Amino acid sequence: MDYRKTAEFERVAPALVERARRYQAAILCDVAGRRGTMNARIRALSPGMSVCGPAYTVEVRPGDNLMFHVALAVARPGDVLVVDGKADDTCALFGELMVTQAKAAGLGGFVVDAASRDTSVLAAGDFPIFAAGTNPCGPTKGLPGRLAQPVSVGGVAVEPGDLVVGDIDGIVVIPRRDVPAVLEAAEKKVAAEGQRLEEIANGQLVSPWLDDALAQAGLPRLG
Image (cartoon, rainbow, N blue to C red; front, side, top):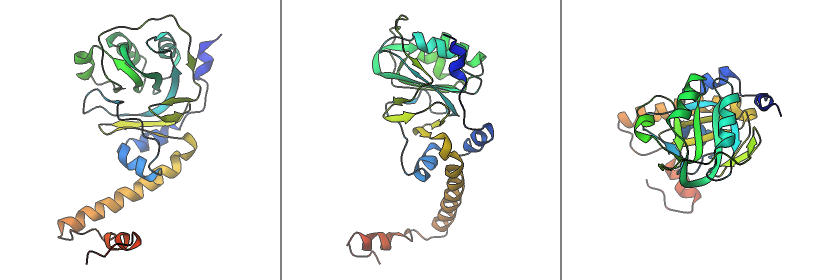
């Protein structure tokens, strides 16, 4: 098997990835129908970390990182390795050595539904890491898995090439075909929220939509 062929899939366009970097995960989630966010157990290793790029998906057996290593060897620069580790936290699937290799290869980050280790070193670094906890125990390296196939990670369906965006709030996945429309909607939402912030600064403290929402819920209006 030529593992390098697993990296031959269509990715979200680089220009769209760069546009997406301007937006918080929360903004993208809201305009994408409040869908696509991973379970909160998958979080940034340090508050300043953020990730944005196309997904290279990996499925491993709990506690084994053999296919994670293969993905690390064949993924393309900018790819975010999204690993279905079955939410296993009994050992770490990666640590300093794998992150150092990923950074040297120009990868975009790790999003792993499993534990990591070497936390003090990795949290102080600038490579984006999102994982489901920490554990000092290392993994085995002897079980098969799947590369560049549809997976479920943190309760979210992810396909190779989808857009993965993450920050201190968590991870959101946008299907590749939806990215242009979601980014257009995100631009409008940011403008609308900017306007609302100005209204608050000018003393308009009650949201203009609140009375209508109360009425639709069959409740008395505030005013």
